[in-house]
Image (tube, rainbow, N blue to C red; front, top):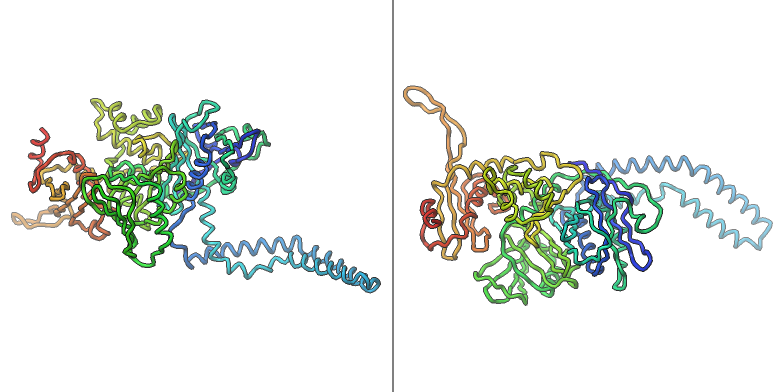
Length: 607
């Protein structure tokens, strides 16, 4: 766990002022950069629905509900609840009981003298008795047991709400980022500066914002005739609303390591090449409507996208075996089928259907995440989904390795450059930092290290690396240090390409192969009349297929690590990752089919 403390000048508010509504987002005062922003929204309803959807991402949880193993924690809570009720009972109830009993006795005396007022006094007696019963602290004791599961379901959810969205003011836009409760969905709302009528020059930087359920309810009241001013003020929101200054709001939470790593790994996944498909809102509605009407109760649970060049896209939903046809035409040159798992997570995009002009779907291949970019005009919503029920953003550090982000590299130079410029493309970063003592590999690794430390993220909309500090304090080193898998991959990449080959399949796919000699132990061998300790090596035969869109189509390795898992890209071994890193450098070559190219042949083609 990583302990994080937030401090706000007050809660975020949404209040009318003069002829407008001020949406005041309270920033974290523990940040070094005092972010400030003030501007009138041109499309407040689009912003409202996008922000409400971002909150839905934060609180979404598709994990199985907790079971009876948590009863111990419940009874610990129940014991504290009983003690507090006993204290309240001893403090207040005895005196209240005596007072009410005296009132009842007076009523009984009055009944003997005033028969005409019997009915009226009887009602008063009943009311006093109900009041007496209301002070009984044990009256709902048995209902506590019935609410057991509800308590467990909501306990962690309330804690997680403290993980407030991250807002970053860039030179060209304002972004709001969030991560889901089960660590499976990433959301980023990007709002162009042109969407605002700025009241003052913005102060660039990153902060967390207090985004409560109460604020979300207030935002739902926005209407077309409402002028909304967005304000991020580190001095507190009293400057904007003229109210009384509230006390500081402080939150202290423990961030799970997987949450932090997952948030940082999303950028590495978004940086990978993949297949992009654009569909219209009607197509997205058809997809969501089918999933709403059909609830699967058995496996397999996936949707298969059937893509034929210049034909409408078809989707088959399993286990139903039913097919829908979209209006979107697949413009690619190669027929293919894409299976997408974790499809029910796509339902979070429903709220954007009335607002979106189009949806860009980015598919990275089987077992890989998917990204949806909703075009809302001057606003864009990027949503990243994992493919499996369990969190796989951080499994095996695969995404940062596949992007070439191994080790620290030229981190310091990248950090200083991006802190100054705030956002640059990978090409610009390489051009500005390349020199005699700085090669492209080290610079690329430096970018990856920046992302792993939570100090930057990749923007797939504009293909830019943006400067952003995820937390007010630096992340603990164990969250971003180079892993054993990354070190193994680096060694395998440096081992050489003597047995590396490339061929082209009849489907026009690159087939890359390599043989890795790996030390697996030592043994004594009898030589020259004596026993000598020698190393034992095992041969690892590894093959990867990559198509013209950069997607992985074939994965093979005879190592134990790969074969004891699901044997797909969701759990790659170090040999596959090393071969992938080398192979992506040759996917632009034009090669003949049914011919095997060795490294010397490849060099001749390059020359």
